Length: 366
Length: 232
Image 1 (cartoon, each protein chain N blue to C red):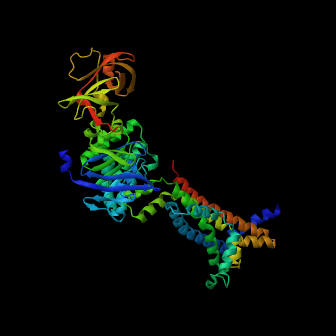
Image 2: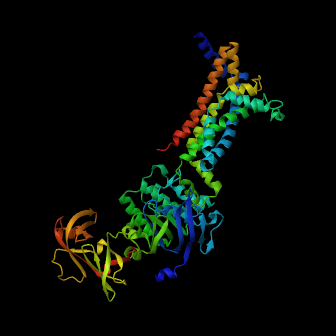
Image 3: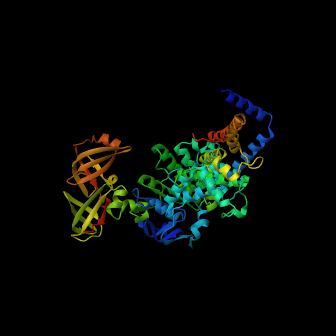
């Protein structure tokens, strides 16, 4: 949090309202983007991420609201501002010319001389791994190569902010993985401020310093990555940042900041300042739930230990998602190794445990 | 059959001997239709781009008008241009009726909706976000428009072909507003009509062959450019 206070505010939005055909599509009371940081906008399709991105890039005129860049209000359609930023869309949107000329486009638009263009562009082509494609027609590129060209075209003008609107969501997983890695490296190396929207939470996690969760045209939560991931403000954010178990309950008793809540089919211990009788939502991330084949209550420091039957196992690549019935539904992630070591299978009874501190508590408005 | 064979023989004789009158008619046709196409490109590309990029009430109606205009009958254009240029018509003071300028005007009126319609379709066919991407690259409005037109250059070549092809082969308007005056406002099509009427089929065939060769050569060049740049 201290880093946040020290960082300079690069872009600021106040009281933003965007409507389309008389319908409000974006209503943001305030948003700040800090110098040198990456802000990820996450949210479902149609949440307003792209609209917010276009508005922040001064490409969409809001009905109401002001945009400030380095403390100065952006006016007159934002032309001067647009020369200091860059944007990459989901589609590469390349011009029908060579890769080199595409990357040079922003420089040509700014009236940069040919000699300087010829000195500047090759470095960026190399940086994005497309040096060997310089003379190739943009029409003959693969999806990944095209998006690399689009990224190089954005970075070559040394923008003060880069807007990335779901830049990799149209790519196949291995290509997306490689590009995310390269982009991550380049953002860190160049200390470029960036705003990246995605509906993929792992992509957001890799790139972001801060995350803003957008839903129905509003920012539901914004904060440092760990805060949003571990302390979602409501059930929607929780489900969106990968919290797989959300249990509604009621506080039975409290003592020394630890409380016991009754949920359907059991009792959960958690940490938090709540009142007895209060309604709560208990959020548990799957990676915080440990499974074992030991009998309950043997050698575990965890406060919450339950015996449960495995209902379903879903492979997720590196992990397996294990659905348990412990009286209530609980989800855990285990590695393939653990799955084999513990000989987990559907119908088997196991012991699930998680710490009281691993339970994030959201007050329930009922 | 003899008539046709003789006609073709005569045609090649006239072409290869560079018959002064035929040459004059051919050059005038090229000049008139070329200029008319040029005017229609300037107006049509601007108007087509403007309509493609803007949203205003009644836009649908304007688009329908343009599309209808693409099939404007040349005689109707000829009639209205004649009325406008008539001695006491709204543009009578220009005193250009029965001159090559009048033909250029009429042909430009015929070609402009064709170019506008094709431009409109071509620009609308570009990715929706391309305009925003160009602006995000720091472009001024004018740079943005130029880059969009440049991106649509292949379909726009089709506009050139359709526009030029339409007017060089058009006869109704040319004869009405040009008057088919020998050595002055006589073009390939009007001369063909006249020679056919007189029964001079050999000359008429010669003129037709030249007309077709011209249309073919120009389209061949443009097609070559278009196919060379064709997206793969």
